[in-house]
Length: 411
Image (cartoon, rainbow, N blue to C red):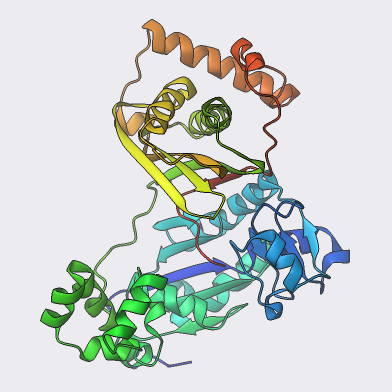
C-alpha cells in the first residue's frame, strides 16, 4: 500500500463486491464452494451473468455467451439466477455502506461510491476505513467479500478497487495518483472500450502515462472531447462529486430468448412482459421515469437501441409499452433477434418530480396495475394476464430475466 503523507482534502471510497451473483450462490450452497460456477441460463443461447473466480482461469467472464463458456470450462456448474435473493443481499450491503457515510452513490446492486471526507476521527485513516468497511460487509453478509479502493477522486478509487480483486484493498493518496496510474494500460481509462483502445494504440498511446504525456490539443484533434476527458483522467483529475440518495438512473428488463424471433407480434410480446416488470418495480420503489429505451440484439450479436423522452414522467406499464412499440417501428433491421429488452431511465422519486394525476384514465390504469401488483406478490406473476395476450404467439420461450438497476459493471 502507498501510505499518505498528509491529510487528504477529500476521501472517496469505491466498494465493489467480488463475483457477486456467483459468490451468493456459493454462500448459500456449500457444495458449490471451490468449484467453477457460472450464473446464467442453462441453455447455450444466454450469456454468463457472473463467473466465479474458480472459473476465470479458464478464460470465462461476464457477458460471454454461455455456449462458449461451457466449451472453455466444461466442468463448470451452471446456476440459474435468483434476482430476488441478489436484491435482498444488495439491500444489506447498502445498509452497511450507509453506516459509514451519509453520501452513498449506488452504481449497481453490488457496488457504490462513498464520500468519506471528514470521517477520519470515526474510522481512522483511509487504510483503516477500507479495512473496517470490508470487515463490516463480510460480517453483515455472512462471508461475502468486497474489494475497496480509496483515493481523492471517483475515477482513481474505482480503478483502485479493481486493482487487487478479489478481496482487495488499495489506497492511492493524491500526491501519488498520477504516477500510480501511469503504467496501467489505456483500457483502464473510464470510457475506453475495445474500439477506442485500438484507436489509442494506433496513435501510439499504450499506457495511461502515454496519454498524460500527450499534447491535449493533439488528443482533442484526434478524439474530440473524449481526448480531453482521457487526458484529465490520466492526470488523476475527476471533479465529480459522490451524489448520495439519488435513486437509480434506470430500471430495465431484458431476456435472451430460447429461439430467435423476427415477427413484430413476438417482439411486442417480449416488450409487454418487460414493461410489466419495469412498471411494477417503478411503483414498488416510488419512482417515475422520464425516458424509455428498447434494445434488440441480432443473431450475430449486433446491438440495436432506440430511446425517447416522455412528455411527462410515468410509472404505468401501459405507457412504457406504448412508447416501446413506437420505438420498435423505427428499426429497419429484419432480424432475427436473440434478445429483447426495455429500460426506463431518468428516474426520480414521485415526491421529488411530479404530483401524479389523481383522476382520469392514467389514474385508473395506475390503480389497475397496482391491484395486479398485489395479486402478483401474493399468488405469483402469472396469475393475471391481459385478454389480448391470449391472441399473441405462445411459443416465445425466454431465458432468465435480467432486471437491473443503473449500469452493470464487470465484477
